[in-house]
Length: 240
Ligand SMILES: NC(=O)c1ccc[n+]([C@@H]2O[C@H](COP(=O)([O-])OP(=O)(O)OC[C@H]3O[C@@H](n4cnc5c(N)ncnc54)[C@H](OP(=O)(O)O)[C@@H]3O)[C@@H](O)[C@H]2O)c1
Image (tube, rainbow, N blue to C red; front, side, top):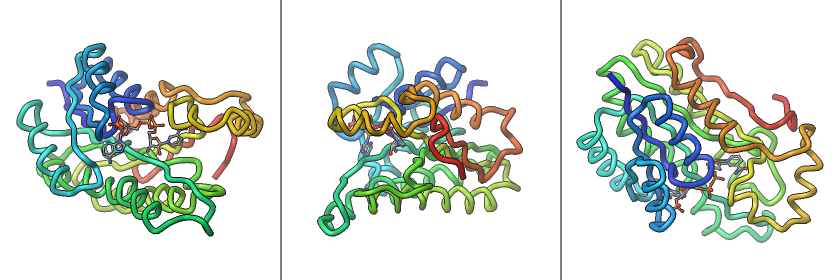
């Protein structure tokens, strides 16, 4: 029987590529988004993938949304915590609001997304938890104290969940993308983008589909012995 996958932030950017790839691999896919109804509607129309709107930063909304997905599509076997935001500022100018928004979405959002599906995965003795972290969680980044903290935190989450879930047939892994050609990156000034590309040995930005293929592998039965790991997909920009 086809497995069910939930992708948060699955209607745009990297998440959209992940949703499409998992659908192509035969999963029943649910994709969530936060507020961009237009993009979600266009994505749903293009792909036939069902979209759900809730704020990953809110536990109660996430729990209710996940219950709805499980009711309508089926028990979630694969959860991809991908929703993420940036609120960049040098530390001396970073506001508590910028700190909180990023922590709430990128870090607490992972808790909110995985915690409600975890008991069912334990019961069914199968689960795949995949968290989309970032190269900047591995190496830090100017003006991203908030973002880097959350993305480093993601790695602590999967390493801990890996230990808790292993005997229940659940794996938890992270993917650390380098700079990928999504709206998030294309929104930075062209000069900054050029300087970013100059730091990538591959000489180009990554494609969302290159991250999606990492996720599809981690979700597969072939990856059953990979647990607590990080796949770095960054064109050679940083080695751990
Ligand atoms: N792009 C990169 O180069 C890069 C590099 C490393 C890591 N990453 C990570 O990869 C992930 C995806 O990035 P992206 O570039 O694809 O982002 P994106 O194009 O900005 O898309 C973000 C997606 O997340 C959703 N989202 C944002 N906040 C949410 C919330 N509170 N609740 C639910 N959904 C929310 C958005 O929904 P709406 O459409 O409603 O806004 C959208 O679907 C992020 O975790 C990011 O940190 C990206």
